[in-house]
Length: 139
Figure 1 (cartoon, rainbow, N blue to C red):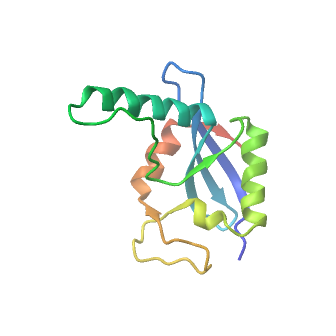
Figure 2 (cartoon, rainbow, N blue to C red):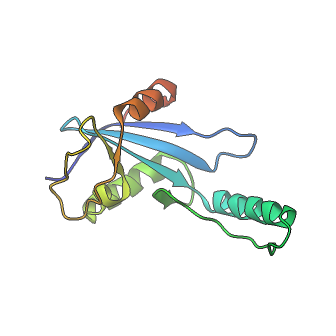
């Protein structure tokens, strides 16, 4: 079954730079919660500069620019609401939404019924923190 968003919450990160990353949480019509991080190219460039600065401080390590993204990130041109919503619509239409977004659930053993899901899970505690700290944007 295709998960249709009922609510979309966004939390843009304000760390002294122009906003270049955003946590997105979605509640679907079926009541499931999903989360993902949206980023822009300047975010990647900033991460690469940070790794370069860190590697310059390490003896016996070559100074190199790189970025390692441990959790799923969606790279977008901008963090405008329309861009994020249109991207979500495309991920749903391409049937890859559940492979990109992390399902938030109480039951660690719950499995996804779609073959594109990766089985990633977050806890409801994480969801509660995000929901309490985000700017609510109804979609």
